[in-house]
Structures are given as C-alpha cells and as structure tokens.
Length: 126
Image 1 (spheres, rainbow, N blue to C red):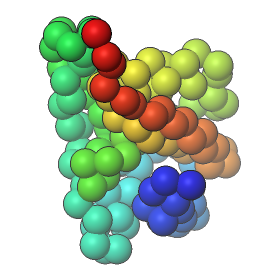
Image 2: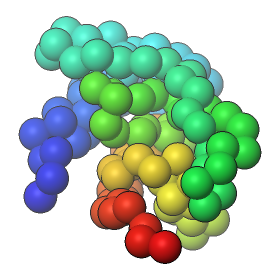
Image 3: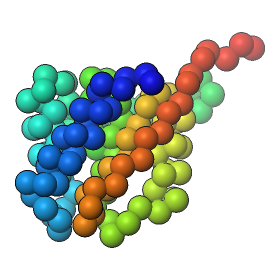
C-alpha cells in the first residue's frame, strides 16, 4: 500500500494521543497533540494547511486541512460521538478536489475511529 509507513505512524500517534488525553477535548487540542507526536517521529506537519481546490484544471479557491503530513497525507480530525457516512464523503470529496492521493479521517470520540481513503490521480488526456 502506498505511504503505508506514514499512515501507520499517523494512526499509531492518534492512539497514543487518545491514550494520554482521553475523551472530551476540542478538536484543536487533539490536532496540536497529534502534530507534536508526528514531529517527534521526524515528520513535517503543517497544521490548518490551505490546499488548492480544483475544478477540471482551474483553481477555484483554497480548502483547509487540519493536518498535512509530509505534503502527502491529508488528515481531517473530528471529535464526534461517532463518524457518519457524510464525514467519509467529505474526505473523499476533499481528496478529489485537492488532488491529494491519501487521506485519513480520525475521530477522537470515546474510542479512536480511523478511515483511510485513497485516490490515484493521472493527468487527463484531452
């Protein structure tokens, strides 16, 4: 699987953060703690990173990712009781619109829930 090491490390760090902090904090607290843990492992982590949103080959504007790890993995964080299908669809749409290949949706609920989404982008032939 592409970027298996990075995604595995992100997931491991998410569980570490949840084990230390527990349940009930705002999303921003988990975001900061997860960024700290990932940086300890040597990853470049951008918080609240703005990515171009594309329609065909035109840039429509910017969208914000909670974390962008090594300029490869888009990480969206939630602090919900449970994830919904709409949360997953939001991540897939974000990957499509930003042209990022891999995204993780991490929910810091009573337990950690993680969804991985992948997109393979190839230039379109006209």
